[in-house]
Amino acid sequence: MSTDAVAEIKARLDILDVVGDHVSLHRSGTQHIGLCPFHAEKTPSFSVSQQRQAFYCHGCHEGGDIFTFVQKIEGVDFSRALELLAERAGVELERSPRAAARGAGRRRSLELNDRAARYYEYVLWSLPAGEPGRRLLAERAVDPALARRFRVGFAPAGGPAGSALVRYLTGKGGALPAEVADAGLASRGRDLFRNRVVFPIADERGQVIGFGGRALGDAPPKYLNTPETGVYHKSIALFGLDQARQALRERRQAVVVEGYFDVLAAHAAGVDGVVASSGTVLTRDQVRILARHADQVVLCFDGDAAGRRAAGTAVDLCAAEKLPARIAVMPAGFKDPDEMVRSDPPAFAALIGGAAPEWRVLVEWAIGDAGADVDERRAAAERVVDVLVRIPEATTRDLYVQEAARRLELAAPALAADVAKARAPGTRGPVRLSAPPPPPAAGIEALGAGLEEGDVGHPPPSWEELLAAFAVQRPALARVLVDEMGLDLDELASPAVRRLLEAALAVPPGSELFVDGLGPGDRRLAAQLQTRDVPELGPDPLVLERAMADCVQRVRGADRRGRYRRDIRDILAGPDPDRDENVAARHRRLLEEERNPPG
Image 1 (tube, rainbow, N blue to C red):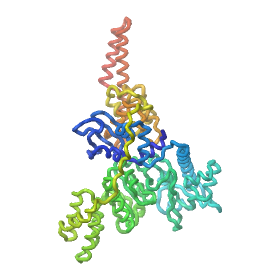
Image 2: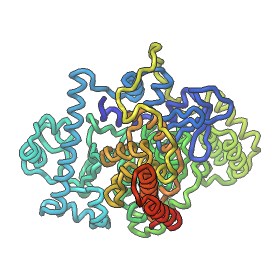
Image 3: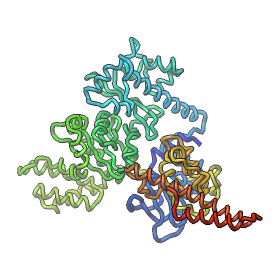
Image 4: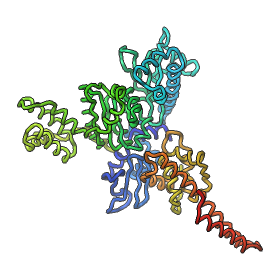
């Protein structure tokens, strides 16, 4: 199994789309619920968490991730499920020598991108050649600490040959010129980025997949991006997503801006759940990725006509993915978020907080400054109809029909008739992806991998279950529990919880727990915990820290009480002449422990 392929498939596909091809789902709070496809039921007990990309049935206790679902629903093993999902996601598996070579090439490109990012950082902050970049950042009022957090760098001119980075990577880095070119870092032996402030573009796991370069002054092109490579696809990449993940997890709202400097400016203003579309208009794939991390997006594009067109297109894409959107309209006098933050940071934060619903803004733009003139009102009505036909929900559409009719002094039924006529050929918007054709019938084969093939066993104590939920939803917390809080896994009463924490400890930094690699029993428990709402994982880190510390204390206390009980049983079963006195002492310690637990 290729872990690269699994991660890429998960990044490209949304479990709601895959499950939704087989189950009719509707939102209930933070979950989507429906009738379980794996057992007969009349009351929905099957839930899907878009945030966690996991499913769980409270009736039959089946659960897992996108791979588990396809295995179960299609009756195939993991390898076949991987093939089906790879085909759907457009990911090539490393089955043939040629595909394996491409996989090795992708890994090499990631390595060279990271080296290039470190090189650009060094030039910007440590060499005289980086002075123009430092001057541009100062002119744009970018705090050096913020720039360092985003790994901003500077690409020097590179000498007469324009190949400083190529020489560095092929010399000290030991790379071949062809590898540097394949990574999108050079063209015809010359550095792609020269005399530019460089912004590394990272994936969700923080791996550098490409770069965006801003020219000094007005030298064309003003912005230059990495070309399409084995690891960088501009229709998928979102600048700043790796830095925004924590804020998205806490607030479930994403702010989308146009430029790299806009992202940095938003962070400077305290708006940290922000991403940019990496030098292109927002795409359907990017919206799908955002829908996995957020329940709502705020679109904050430039205030010119191009920005308005981009906002309109983005609204259509969000509507197609059933992702609610709002639009923050740049006030007069400000070209973009970067310019506004440099003038008034609190005002930008307030602008985002007060963003209006997407269709209200689009209708307002369509009406414009139409006055009493009949021709002006007719033209405005035509523009309004073009907006109203795009609203997918009938009730929302009707509300805006009435509002627009009132504003234009028209009869609402007449405007509604025009909208209905325009919608008659079919609703607008992209069609949702369909599932690939099912494979030939096959029996479900036993998993060859997993920590435990048995069932979960006895339900774990509530505090251990909460620890497991922490580790399953945020694997990095397992390392905090063990290294910083001193949790001893041998003190855990539940073997299943112990195995889940061990699995979380093995997860690479920035990655998610691979639920399908667990045994059936552990997988069910992990899926149940993935779809569970855990308030302690909210925005307040002190709440989480106290909850973790309390759970660790409870584990230790339960382990001590268990040892006392075992001591009493051993004494009662042995020939100890002082048995009664020792039993009484152990009983007193046990009672004292239960009355006044430590911590």
